[in-house]
Length: 152
Ligand SMILES: [Zn+2]
Image 1 (cartoon, rainbow, N blue to C red):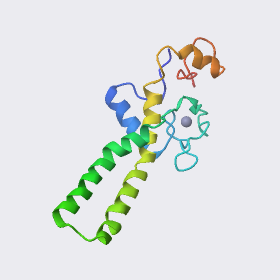
Image 2: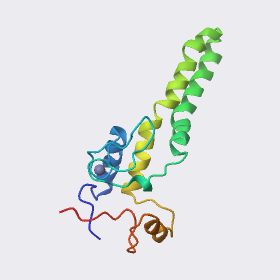
Image 3: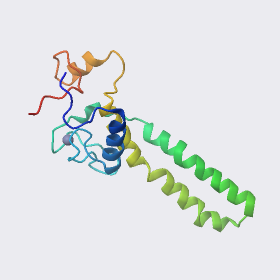
């Protein structure tokens, strides 16, 4: 198998690459093309290297991580605000409501980018479906969708 020319091999570099390309919404293979065509919609193919994004299936992952990592601490803050100060309702309308709205929506895109980049770098697919994937994607040469052609 030919190693991917861009995605670095050592684990540290992989993680850094996933974080960087996901955060900036760039193609996880070439790092040049855009990953998103709108706020959360993934492009079909990379405009720079023609990477087929059909492998990308983060499903509910972004919402799940957004809730766990961002919304739960925010809820804790809102509860603390209420218990500690018992503020009037307008304080919550001015602080808690916008915080919760932004805190759950803004992280969705970078989290989705990280999940898609992670799927590509780690060649994530359901166990035993490699042959089916290659049939569906018209690359039925016994290769997985993640093995990219040599680009020298
Ligand atoms: Zn690309």
